[in-house]
Length: 214
Image 1 (cartoon, rainbow, N blue to C red):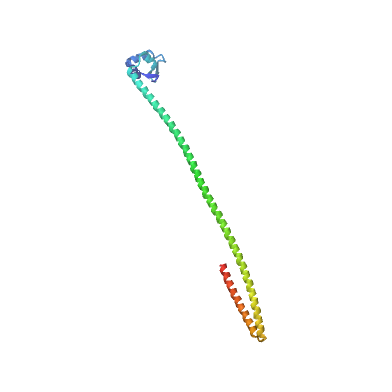
Image 2 (tube, rainbow, N blue to C red):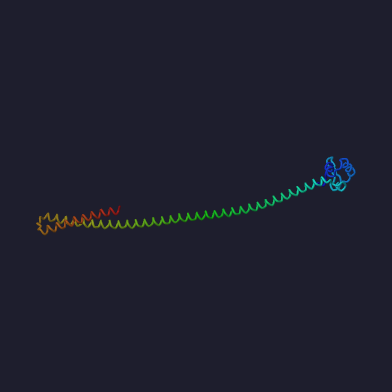
């Protein structure tokens, strides 16, 4: 209830006629604690008015109903505010859980990334070791081939020298028209056979060398 009410509200409050309320206003207009004028309209102090003319039962019921409704609205507002605080607290709890879940997901993602990175590094290390091992094998094989070629070349040179020697010997024998006996001819035949055998071995070695090199 307001502290100050106008004349119409005073009529409703007390059940008195408008003339009775105006008469009271005129009598008390000089007392600012009881009556005051705002923009040409008179207002009466509610407590003073009720002291002179008690409020009607209908108004009291209406006021009580209004008060109950206001109390109900206040309770509902308080309940809404309380529920809002609960919802807010739950929202904060949910946000914290979401943050924890996000951190856990990020940790799992990092673990997966670390595993993939470690696997890639392991593959690179194994590939490097395999390449080094292969290079070492090829290097050793190349050295063996070079050594074999050197031996073949040396043997070939020796065979050529032997052939040249025998060729010179035959030429000398032919020039001097020396008659060779059966034994000498047999020796020469054996020597030629040996030369042919050596040449055949030389060819076989050359073929084997080419095969190994390829």
